[in-house]
Image 1 (cartoon, helix red, strand yellow):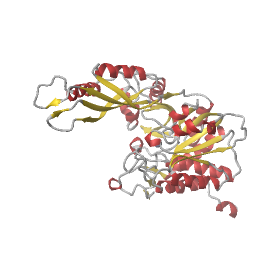
Image 2 (tube, helix red, strand yellow; image 1 turned 90 degrees about the horizontal axis):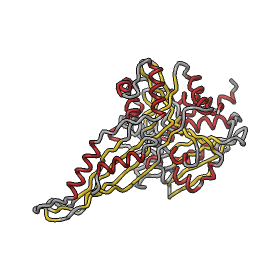
Image 3 (cartoon, protein in one colour; image 1 turned 90 degrees about the vertical axis):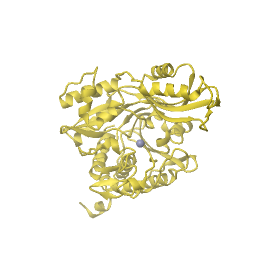
Image 4 (tube, helix red, strand yellow; image 1 turned 180 degrees about the horizontal axis):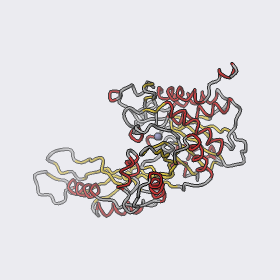
Length: 439
Ligand SMILES: [Zn+2]
């Protein structure tokens, strides 16, 4: 290797340092606007891009709520573009619960520790490191790649992806497909590794239930007590056993893992098979049915006063295609005397596990990990992909990481001691490099 070449770091050299830098920039999103915002992280990313001649456009939906976007021109710009998006915010972390300071970017046990290590400053860093290497080498992607780093994903993207889609859709013109977080990671069962690529997401309905009754003195007979009516409705919702609903993505997932691991999967009763999947079971288990969890109660102001109204908050998640069924069931459960109001809503999303882009993902994974297998799965939560799907963009969760068998990866998301193996970051860069080149 010539001397000048050793001076230029490769993506695999840089990825850990970039991820570490990003973790050290606290971009906690408390959901109420009280956090530091994403500006510092966005400025860091913009600096890394402009060093290699990409000049991003920076947008602020509000003061310090910063997103940026830049188009990396491809060999053939007449082809539809590929969007690679990542969010810059993280959920808050309480330092006293952690082994290492969550914003120190500590390296220990061959892992990089800190808030955002897997959600999703890892992917942000992998993409940045790769793009920098491609620019230095004078390589271009086969088609335009739109790089977008976003604010506010952890609070639903109102000040990030949703805002960008509503206010600057032109930045995504001609883009047909996208990749982003919560997919492409490995799960090991019985020595066999599978990579779960996200092709579907559940939708969100956060509901407020309101019961109205007759206010009065707590010592009187009251047969129209709002607290009682609300409590009954909440109990019915919380105790309801939601029927299983098989979506195409979950069915394909179950068939694939049955085949990969050589065990029978009864599609009418898949839970026994799922239980063999370790940490993955938790994610997939929540995608077999709609769910509705009561999470907050609000009523009354004095021990001897019956209040006029009582409120409950329900976190409802529906499978693609089952929103109406879920709301009809909720209405039946709460009855005519309790009213429901929408607090936060977002769509479900589902695409098929086929086509050239999926082939490129699978081939890139297999090239770096030949004995593995890639399968589609449905995410029980949501990502910014929901926003971009409104522009007709077909998106996938593909942030490739080869992980040690014993790492509780799904527990890392928003968890204590979030960390990513250094080798996984380097693996991700190699897979993304192959993927982009074949996309
Ligand atoms: Zn995330």
